[in-house]
Image (tube, rainbow, N blue to C red; front, side, top):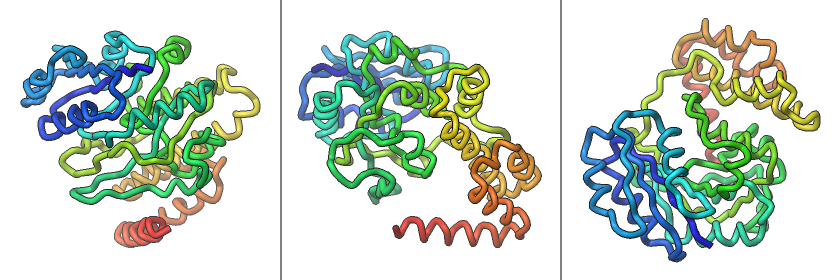
Amino acid sequence: MKFSVIIPLYNKEKHIAEAIESVLSQTVPDFEIIIVDNGSSDNSLHIAKTYERPGVKVVTQLERKGVSSARNTGIEASSYDHLCFLDADDYWFEDFLQNISELIEAFPQAGIYTTAIQFKRKDTLYHPGYYGLPQAPAKLIVPDYFESILHGEQVITASSVCIPKHILNETGPFDEQVRDGEDQELWNRIALKYPVAFHRSASAVYRQDADNMITHQVPKRELDHAVKLQKMLDEGHIPDIRKDIIQKIIAANLIGVASMNILAGDKAMARLLLNDPRSKKLPQRRSYWVLLLALPNFLVRILYALRRKLLNKR
């Protein structure tokens, strides 16, 4: 079993070496690394090029086209049948590819293979509980991927995922027109057709350091991946048995964007999003944020912080 590991790179000079080293240290030896530089203006490309050797290649895109374009370029340059992705500011533990190999052997029918992750904030690692998934066995098919993400489980990240190439040949690669939630949009497309296989061993680290996170403005509309789901609903591409959960995912997106606007102090935009009839598919979740609309901003932030603290203690 051989893997192509695709690392999109843009201005990550602090962490690209650690990302590459984490792949080179894998206990599974059969892989290639494809680093796709997306127009870096710092020292990232120079650092990446120091690792060039047989099995490690650096591809440069002179024009910055976005992370989806970089990932797709890596897919086109890949030689092997199993495509793994790693963001340049994240890293793997040495057993990542071994755990993915075990999943592929156990669940050849799956369309996505993924492992648990740890979040890194400054120098501390945090392990999500994945409480919405069965606690055993260690290797499993996610019972309902969309139910899991509806309840906040980050089952798949762009640094803990492996996709067979034949799956992408069927569903299509990353949509380069999607600018927010581009990875989620691809996971959605695949999960509508194929099972998602999950390994409970935390094998990847996702950085949440302030200087590593991309700075996002608070969105003022539903995110692109939810827009794509709505389009699939409207065009009849969602099976009847999945329509209810997909409508709830769309509602969750509207409410989630509204919540960000409430916390940012833009209650007018939040009200507009919460007044969208589609948000009523999740009445209890919606009611919570409608209630917060009536409170002063400082009190909203206090209540939200308390809620997060309680959830983190689960």
